[in-house]
Amino acid sequence: MKIVISATAQGQDASVDARLGRCAYFAVVDTESGDFQAMPNPFLETNGGAGTRTAQWIVGQRAELLLTGRCGPKAAMVLERAGVRVVEGVSGSVAEAVERHAGQGNVLAPAGAGRGAGREPCDGIARCGGGRGRGNGAAMGSGRGMGVGRGLGNGRGRG
Image 1 (cartoon, rainbow, N blue to C red):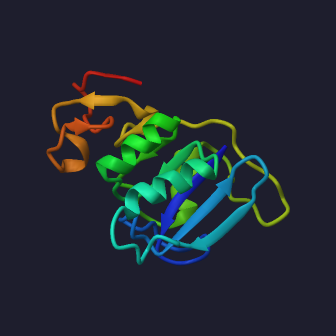
Image 2: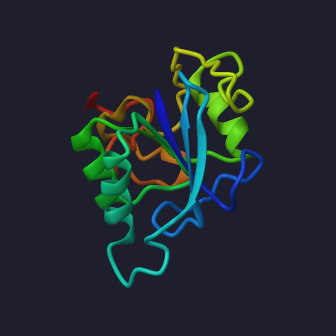
Image 3: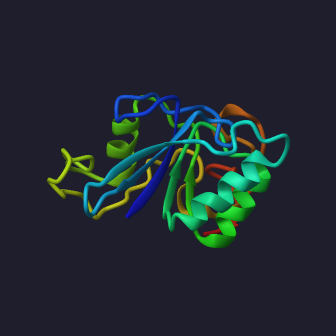
């Protein structure tokens, strides 16, 4: 599975960035090969549409999962249409986030080791499964229920 993580710096020890379109770096992890890449966000200084452009870039990376602090509604719509699952409210280091959301085992193996986990459990936080929610507004304490899978618990959705 290919995972994109918004990051504050390069490396597996970097913190997950709370922003998606304006994050400093993207970490791209392939859980099957153990490959890890960190690259500067080319949309960081964009005047407008950074979130949407970032979402399009993520789709172009053929990512299956996005881990970030927050994903705006326009970017979320692009990702949902492409089938990319989004988990918001992610914190900690890039390595911790991948381990927490990509399954059990050492997903971020040392370079060349190629170990990874195939399971992708959802911890029930945010937008696992990518459902379109009209929930009760319990998403990450923001009180928003309208948007791509943002409702928790009592949200009606397809996913």
